[in-house]
Image 1: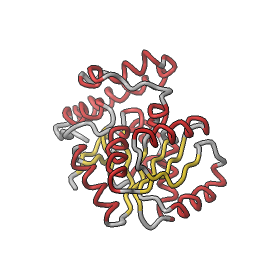
Image 2: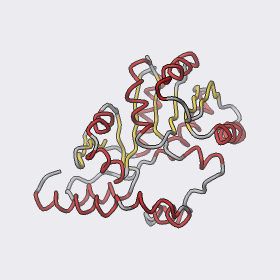
Image 3: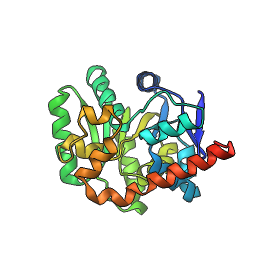
Image 4: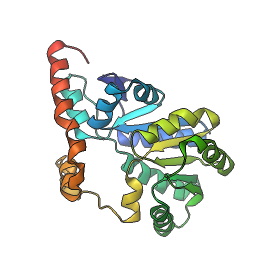
Length: 244
């Protein structure tokens, strides 16, 4: 698959529809697949943390979750086709699973949030098969216990909502223990499904200002948003130097 490198992060040149189809095929063929969706904040973190960059490089697919990544690819004259978000991937894969009977494992969030996620998924997808779940507040040194729980559940799809960088690290460090399954990083998607956080309205997403909607709704995110101008400056410098 063609890749587009942005500050050392190899992004998959793939659109949402094609990726969903390929992940569905991976499940049917009982193949493993590791999917990460990145924004400028994640790319900046990877450039400051070599161990984290190594975790990203273990993924089979890395897609552009943030519009900043798309704009950067265009500026560097190697444009990606479109945004492919973890939330949208999860929703489409849940719909497919509801029809085909794929088994789902949920990892992440608070226990009470996780319970609401399971309740809402059962409501919206009556035939969904949730074969296991675990909250995201666990002792990292006892991660082997969770790995064993996932193995026993034998899911086709594991949605990991630990937030960056933990979700990418957890999958990277443990995926070799599994023989099959799609492992998808979904960030704060559980909070949206639980009803605790509202996703930006369609109009905001259409004009690529979902980040602004999140900032308005969650002002505490402002420190994280500082990564955006730093990312933009780094991309402009690379453009001037002619490097990806």
